Length: 160
Image (cartoon, rainbow, N blue to C red; front, side, top):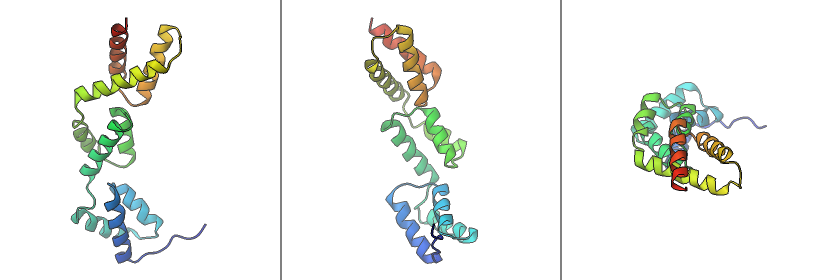
């Protein structure tokens, strides 16, 4: 394994500008990248401040982008999104505030679509087994269990 490449402050700042311009980044991702480049803590702090001042880094913007992408593209629920953001070092207040951006009606529709899609993939099994597989799938995607069970009952009532 080759040693980390040591960049000058100016080079690292310029590279970080491109890195952050390419897609939204959180502070933790930038710090981790700078540490792998062998930058010291003081330089990392200066670079972070500069990127924030130049609006390359913005935790709120990052959080909203992640929430939108994970919910709309991957079909994740609030619980899984929250866990992913916490693993990136985003504070709970910002996560909770940003999660309010998800429309409740849209959230339920997405969950219902996921559950119907899952139901259609299940072979002829005992109805109770189908329910449990559907619930396990949706809960694994990060949806709240009470809501999952409520929507499952709704789907099954409609299909009768």
